[in-house]
Image (cartoon, rainbow, N blue to C red):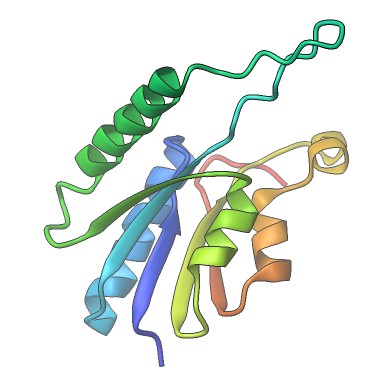
Length: 143
């Protein structure tokens, strides 16, 4: 039994379509809708043996900005929840999901070479998720 719909949002048009589809499922099932954006931490720069870590205030401002933007996307669906986390997108989405979650992600049209070099968040989510996954094929994408 599905008790929550969790949608991964990267602010692309494809993820907007996934959010709309996820919201429709949440409404149909009468369950809460949660949208989640994952910020990827900047890699530390290693000039010679010195490590330059990002300013914590700058990181907090990035998180705050993402939360405000995500909440704006959710205005259409009162009562929905916005989550912003740091880490790898697939790994954080999977960590947030439980067996009774419907996890919704967008399939972005990458070339075969791009998929081989960089992987696909949607493919990793499908492989690792503890729950059902809906992969939304965004209109205008190619395979």
